[in-house]
Length: 301
Image (tube, rainbow, N blue to C red; front, top):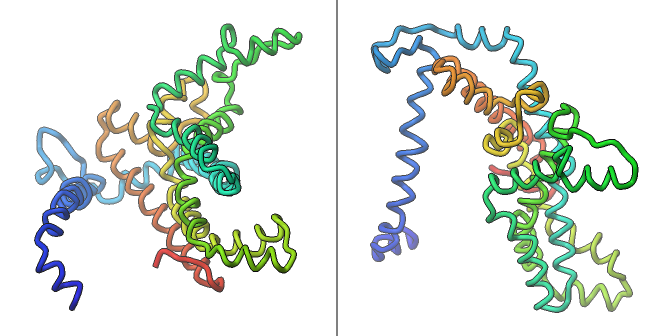
């Protein structure tokens, strides 16, 4: 009642909500009706309502095609690489920044690690491609200087998952570490003082106080990332991939782009996109139900 009364007494709060509500309605809820295209033989000339129904035919075509196994495998591999290698880095970075005692030095380190997030991925992808160039790239020039042969990194399929994961770590680790830094600031300082009195060293304080205190945040972020496994960043993959390495770089989002926008097969692409959404929902619900079984573990609901 108090909360409802405060909203009623302060209309400025409702005015502040208007842009958020409009954004959700225009870009989140209203477009949901477009998934019906996946069940129709959509034609731009007939329109959305007059296009004939096609049932689950496009889903059958996708599941039986040669692309289904490839794009699903690549999507899960890139998502798995992120969870295995990129997910722990912001946690480690936050712990390292939190251990810096000098405020100015701490701010300087945090600024340096945060800057790549605000740089367009177009720029970062261009820098990465130039650095890995077989002729003019710094990496291959160094290899040649020590007598090794240059490697065509961007033309070999096995290198793409590692290159993509490394770039994600470089670009987003500083930004994602902010969440864990906020969780670290919420820890009661008296716990560390009591631990020092009991003779606990830095490592013991880390394992007994710091990590258990931020574990709910870690679990919560992990659940969110599991839901994003199949939602691999479209722009980042598209900018790094080429026709030579499509076997390992083609993911669901880029496949939808090529089939839907470039190939103008809107119904088929919508069916594939709907499959991606449902699969992500299953992953989130499953991982959340598992997390709720553990004591003191955070969950999304």
